[in-house]
Length: 207
Image: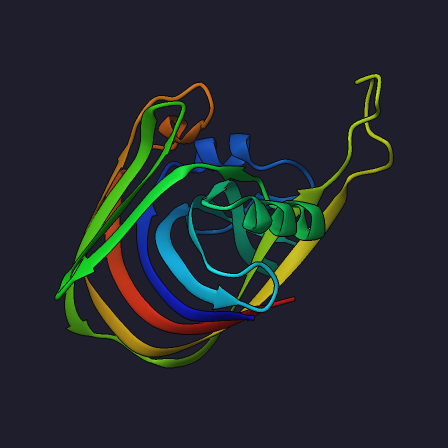
């Protein structure tokens, strides 16, 4: 249970061939070649306390189920990293995260190894729909063998369901900048066009 969530999400068009190359089987590209970047803060949670989080994902499909596959999910605390990685298999990594909001302007960034690999901002002034929304994401949960020769067991594909109830939602224009980093492969995702930026406040619950 995530409380006091403030989040900027920027949706963008990318290239289908790149999405297909990024997705591990049995995931397949969704009909639309869409990516998401987000940054925000969780004021408190029922499991790991407060933390800041960011991420980059692409739209994916498993059978008839459409969701988002995260390429990276940097977080600000070890507790948030352990929870998301060990429970769900999310690709969480510790990073230096910035999230700021002032009036209609929202911005943030993620940095690892002294490289700011993700920067984003939005100017969100138009009212957007509030209330309860549901979404799905995919992750692969696995452990390596001690000798590095493979996996301890067959990796599991995990569907993460999220219910988010927003009390504040604003839409507007957004911007994303990816930078080259040996630690994060986000530079390989082309941003052909930014679709929109959405700022939300509310609370979420994941299962």
